[in-house]
Image 1 (spheres, each protein chain N blue to C red):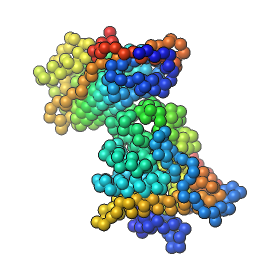
Image 2 (cartoon, chains in turn orange, green; image 1 turned 60 degrees about the vertical axis):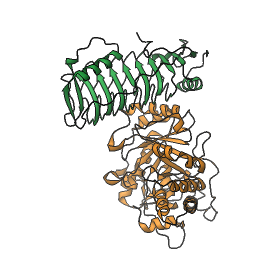
Image 3 (cartoon, rainbow over the protein chains, first blue to last red; image 1 turned 180 degrees about the vertical axis):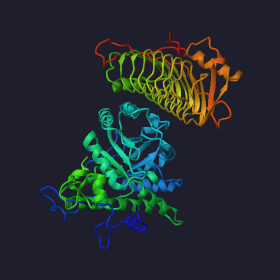
Image 4 (cartoon, each protein chain N blue to C red; image 1 turned 135 degrees about the horizontal axis):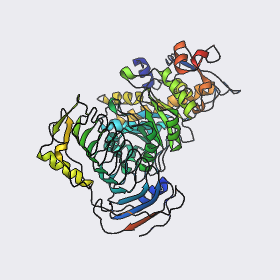
Length: 339
Length: 258
């Protein structure tokens, strides 16, 4: 869980490599691999990657693998949305919004030029017009109170195709699995064949919340068995090194609500200026991405998105057991945890 | 206006429909064999006739079109539909009418498991039998099963009404059953008429509603004025239906049905 000091440092835009920085708190470390490990440590990281990560035709593209999850945060003030749009757009991240939020704030968000990812919950009244400004659609596979979106997993490819049809075959479709309930490998492979780009694994909250190590383990299982890219929806990544660790743990993409909450809190101040809040958010995202690049370079990988399980080491027995990652210092997976 | 042999995959069929979708246009799709997600998200008052066996998610997210399937269809028919009308001459797979918000969904054959799952509005009529789980998590709208409803109906329902044969098992923790009053009987007859059942005995049916629900839930928006859709099939390779588009006067909903 994120402490107030970590949140304050994150919002202040302090680098994880700055003096006095605290460890990120995840029970994992990055291990170098390959002949170039450590060679790029001194290289200045670039502000934004040149290759776009995700984006539909005619919609702004996602450039850093970060989704700012606004779906669970009540954001009534339009200035907060303006700040979020400005910050996310400057930082190259995308906003994950619900259909109600998109309907209400479409003008502000379009004006900001921020990539939008619609979180489509089961039962949302979706229309082609609503999906038109979206760079991608993330279909939630669980409704509130645990109800499934589909009568069976066999219907998953059909849902993917229906959503693709709804976007006019323009925007990619992602899946969002409820905590600990990722679809089976066969269903995921079929969904990928139907056009699903990846599956998001939710950390959850309250009694359903999964520890980060369990999330990492699930991501690796999905990637290994279903050969589908996974992404993590978690607030555990509080700095760039943690972002790089999450990438190594199996996430092609990370969705987090923490920067959104921090921006909303900053905007609640009486003398808040939405442009300043947006700029602060943009700076936060830049520092996050640059730190992730530094951490990846130290592990011998040019781009954090190219980090993989071979770069991940668990720092505790529990984390190794939950994630299936190699225990630091042991050199290989513990044999009784490789089931 | 006439189109040609354009159809092949679901994507190409959908692109063609989207390109020509205008009120009053009728598409006929022939030789459809398991194509998924056809006629999705149509908001214009167009008509789509599907000749063959459609796959999953036929007419999902429908928002105003009139869709007629002349054969059986796959899973999740009319998923998330908000308006319009869908008629299936054959049977429907599991999850027909799941997350239905509005409009009318009429199945002339059997329905698979979880028909009307978490529906929140509109009307779903099953002429024959429904497998287990009908109306599970239902929050609104009307579900009528004129044949036998297997298993427990209305599990976890919080609203809406289910018309089923007397003696049907329902979730008594959240729903109650009552004999049909004159209003309920009239409504059942109207729903039965939608699937061409003229002679129905209301005394053989009960109305199952949520415990918290005092009165009958409002019905859906019903069938919209028909548009015309024509897609003519080639009879060639299975995954390559031909699509033709025609424009003409409005047909009444269900006019194409036997």
